[in-house]
Length: 97
Image 1 (cartoon, rainbow, N blue to C red):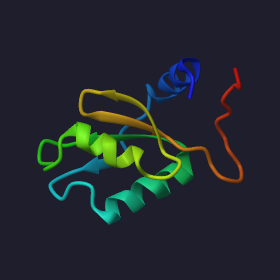
Image 2 (image 1 turned 60 degrees about the horizontal axis):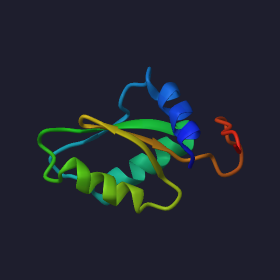
Image 3 (image 1 turned 90 degrees about the horizontal axis):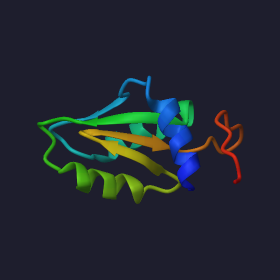
Image 4 (image 1 turned 60 degrees about the vertical axis):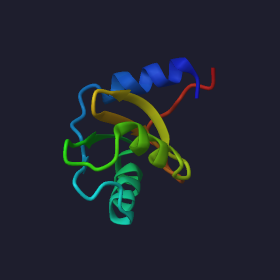
């Protein structure tokens, strides 16, 4: 993903509220499923790493970026912006250049 594409996605994500909170159970299979289902619905989401999360935000980013097709756009504070285009009908169009 190019810098311009990430900049465009960051601008789109600015007004979004976090849809997934990573709490005291960390990044469980259920949480990963929730992230994937939200990405299918919205393509661009924010996740919040709460104080009670046993994993550091860096570890959360590593595990999320290992998920197939998920792109970490930005990490700011305890908020992670994620992007995954819809497999059949992408709503967010990224320029090729």
